[in-house]
Image 1 (cartoon, rainbow over the protein chains, first blue to last red):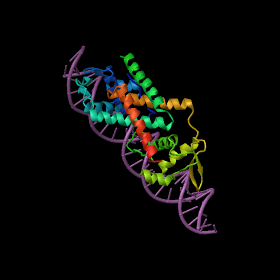
Image 2: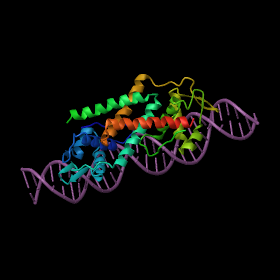
Image 3: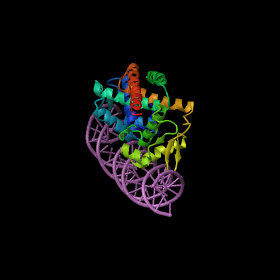
Image 4: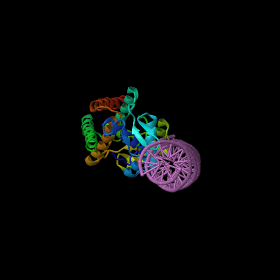
Length: 131
Length: 131
DNA sequence: CTCGGTGTATTATGACGTTAGTACAGCATG
DNA sequence: CATGCTGTACTAACGTCATAATACACCGAG
């Protein structure tokens, strides 16, 4: 599925939320697909079920997941993506953070772009492989 | 100087640490320059002095800052940059995070690169303007 | 119906980051 | 010397995050 890093500065439930979004936009999870149960994913990621539950709850509120009680959680038929404005805000914030750390260690824009390109492909390939 | 976001997931002292590194690599702070006092910067950023103190302390341990008691904190004559291996690790991690969020919201690599390029220039320009 | 799985809610606990306040040691300036 | 600035250290408090242990409501399968 995907990994999670407890040492990371961003909370685990957010990593799970973003991880699930990645799986969907990469096609590893398709509309109507059954998502691992809270307890299963918690075991798999070696994380507390409550932490997974929080991520699932947020995704459900956002319309990305739908819940059938007693049956499981599924990817919504039309996974509501973020509006373009919100999407741009998210991307811009992330870009600012990345640019900031790149500059802070003296990396050039080309360096940053190269590393980004490599990482982008890497993430895509890993997900393609596991699906 | 630079800004700080309490809502960010990464701790404030780390934002200050990276911000100072940016100032140095961008030339806004040069070796031998006097750095704002802990209390001054704390007032300016609307942050607790202890938070600034922690960032300064780390930078001092890393050889980026040197301290003259009763006088102030200065940029070290030869600000010891990170080793190439560490530098690459930091950049790679940051790139992975950025790529992950970009993919999670369905942004293409080109989108991510464009936004990165824009943000990189923006950070550079802002620092140039303030120096 | 019963059983097992699902999501959900609640409470308690420990670790961590941040803030606030206070206090101390050292140096420069007057 | 005395004052005021510097960095540094310590404690208490609060909020968030993650964990843990339950308990409940719901649904499908047997």
